[in-house]
Image (cartoon, rainbow, N blue to C red):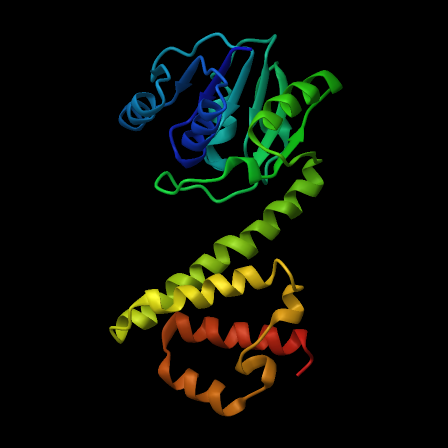
Length: 249
């Protein structure tokens, strides 16, 4: 099967790398950013282009959500399968007469961070059983965890991912602002962060909650509020209120 990846960002890079590691040949990586495409091409030994889109059996669109529809219009071949990697968009966003699908890897991607691809859940949605088997077979070469998912279910998968990943990472960034302001190395907090994540592999997150809010320790909560200002203070109050509501404190 001739496969083309469209995009040059984090997801495109990791999809190309995952395929490369599993000896799944790529016909081409295509996109607008020639500099980034060249880096991927040189690392993974995959042809790239910013001008000519090769004729393929499967196109995997790995671009931002707001670009998927416009990018999908460059594919004019009708007898082909096209998949986007968005967690929030329906397959119908693809604006062509080809067979439409989604190929969603549930993970946070950064080019500088290596990943264990076999642990990444992939969620597949297609228009027919034949295409579903094609994508299942492809994803199963990369991952041990491949499932079918409707767009309706995938929307909630993506929402959960944003809460559990993007929001949590933003809290890490805000926490580092506090530690940096007092010249406290953020490395001190990494064992705590690691243990917090490890714990929810064994304990339900709700049961694992600790801290002054769940204890309703008003003295500590007020002290912390005196130390914060601006958006960090707003976040602190909002999070504590949410914790207290969850535990009806």
